[in-house]
Every structure is written in C-alpha cells, then in structure tokens.
Length: 114
Length: 111
Image (cartoon, rainbow over all chains, first blue to last red):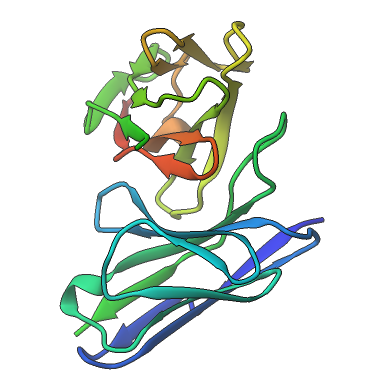
C-alpha cells in the first residue's frame, strides 16, 4: 500500500537560519508531489508541485524553494527563514487525473520561526 | 488561473440537522475533478467526496452529498444528520494539472 512520510513533525528555527523539510512516498511510482502551507486557521496555499524528477512548478514567489532529486522524494528548502515563513506545511501526492484521483497527505510539519 | 472560493469562513449546525457548505470555482477547462476534504483538529486531511466534472450525476457518500452545477461552477457539500464527529475544517478543492484548495469553512456541531 502507498504511504507518505513527512518530517520533522515540529520545528523551531531562528530567523535567518536554513530550512529543509523532506517528504517521501512509498508504494507508487511517478506520483505528482505537492507542498502546501497552512497559516493559522487559514486555507491551504499551494507552494510547489512536481510532475516528475527535476520538474518543479512554483505557485507563489517567496523565500522558499523545492527540489525533487528522486522520483518519490520532495524537499522544501530555504536559505534564510523569515518570521512570515511560520506555518503548517503539508506534503501530498496524487497519481494525477483519473477516476480515483485523490491527494494523500503527510502528517504535516509545524514550523515556528523565532 | 484556476481559483476556488469558499465564502463561509464558519458555520454552525445543530446535531442531527442538515447543513450545506458552499464552494465556487473558476476554470476554463472542461475536464477536471472536484473534492471536499475534511481536516479535524488532528490536522490530518481526509477525503470526504470526489466529483468528476464529466459526470452529471451528483456524488454521494453515505451522509455526504454534493450539488454540482457545472455551468454555474458551483460545488456545494450537504451533510445530513450532522454528528459531533463532523466538526472540522472543510476544504473544497479542484484538480486539473494540479490541486488547489479554497480557504476552508470551519463547521461547528451544536449538541
């Protein structure tokens, strides 16, 4: 069966420090991969999505970047965190459009920038 | 660009009653998918119901059903016989080449 792992679950980082959040998917190949951010009590903002290795689409220009070094690995990074980067980050995968299409989500990472 | 709008930030319903959550979207595509996701306090995202745009029949899943109006680009969720466990944030979502979400509606169930 397919599973998605996202870590760490919580993270407290000082302003100006780097960030690396990792997400891996098991049990499927060539998934579509997503990074979303959810500010407190708000909706899910799509940050990046990827339809294949090395193919990254950025939805919101900001302080973050994403990479997909392997088929089932998706990494969210920042060189220097800002206070406004605080939030709940969710990784997700899907097989793309089809009768049973669905986004499967990781457990999320709560990032607090101090 | 595609957008998803949920105009009700919060709603309340009495236990055992029926409630309808609204969602509208904007797209120039004809082939796409629509979803409702539930996010309980655990923050785990759970698929509630899925609708394929080329199907005119409204999707149903037990107490959950949708009213899909393709021409109006409307996709509302009806929850019948509301239960305390239905209390959560509900997100409407749209997929063609990517999945985008609305801002959510927080649903409170009153005992």
